[in-house]
Length: 220
Image 1 (cartoon, rainbow, N blue to C red):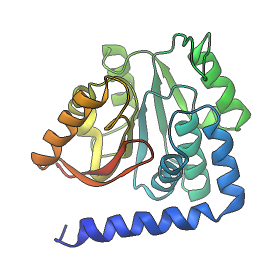
Image 2 (cartoon, helix red, strand yellow):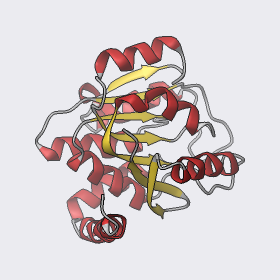
Image 3 (cartoon, rainbow, N blue to C red):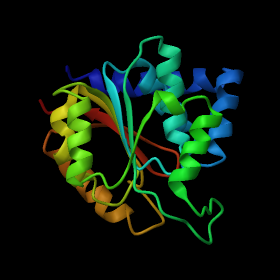
Image 4 (tube, helix red, strand yellow):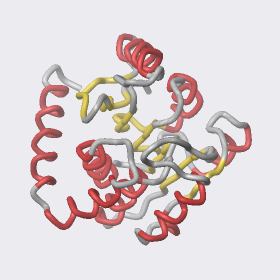
């Protein structure tokens, strides 16, 4: 990439974001998905955009109730180019929250079904770093075949990047939530992402919403 590439990419993303905001039908669909999400609508729009243009499959860690999964699924559908969407979610329950749920994984399936995307996504119910999960992802993807990586799980993003990055293609789009956060995830996430940027493995293209990091994978 030349010296102007990051600036050009940043401007391109801002322009695309504005354009998508004015596409009423799409914006409405993503706003419906945002009803069961802690991600900002602009982040969901960018996930849609990345999934639509990505040259490769999609790997998501931490689907929660499926808003980002739906955004990615709609992007792939609208691209007209079939690709794999693999989404990992541990599940469990969430109490005392506006998105409280007794069964995260079951509600994730319901939300994908309502969006007509359940069959388009391979859901893995488990931890991203379990041997069974890793084996499943590696069976479904080859080296360099992932074009979009979404992380919205715990604060150990470095662990999962180290685990799956051999599957990332050159310039793979990367979305990492909680770079800035009101929770205790923000600090460790920010340190790990900054180290990867400094080490030349990630390229930062911006922060969106309430602190979601967006960039690209640089390492071969």
